[in-house]
Image (cartoon, rainbow, N blue to C red):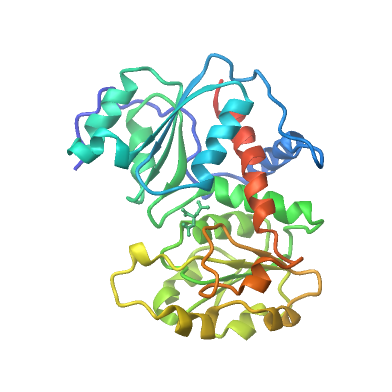
Length: 313
Ligand code: NCD
């Protein structure tokens, strides 16, 4: 039970907690602004002064490489000051509770907190109690809103439209906040979404997640005519039952070059990372012309700049 936050409950400051509560116009505005921040080919991100004087705390209670670095770069490119804390190196490892850690940080008056936490709903809880904007950088198995936004930006960059887009999301859907955020975003635009993976990782109730979603347990069926293939990592850290071996998983749900022929000829292959070659996809797919995995990483900075600019007054 989380109790005793320093500030009294009040109308929460506007941050970004999930995609589910965003409407289409808000999503479009962020994606459009992210396009403005994208550097020209061969150039780097411009350094702006938009958030000069703002202090942003990045609080990561779970492992992260790309999301954390991407937020830090976005914050600095906008001229903000940043402090990043990993739970392993903070007083959390000395037994301090989440509430005490947050009270301590809030007492130092940051302007926003970017937070990743293993508990679904942790950033929502914070947002209800703190008067500063909270950006969700991934909460348990719930949502990862900036990932879905950067994925959408990457799809649009390839000249595809989100309306009527056929997307196959393949892997450990049950534990994936990336899948959930993507489903909410893509369904806002009328995409046709197939969720595919082993039955233990794609429970039936996921069909009700949003309009336009169907389930498939056969990978070939899911890939047919796909415009976008989104592969997901098997989240071993969130699975309680004995997992399939990497080899067995790869045999049934690993993406290989020959699979791409089932999809549209201009299909793109996405993965939020970190990728496990030989489990979720083969190396030749990961490194192929169809793969946009590094474009996703690149777009993370532009999208996070757009989100930060929007939430910080
Ligand atoms: C994802 C995450 O942490 O939810 N990674 C990321 O942020 N790019 C996906 C994963 O860990 O598999």
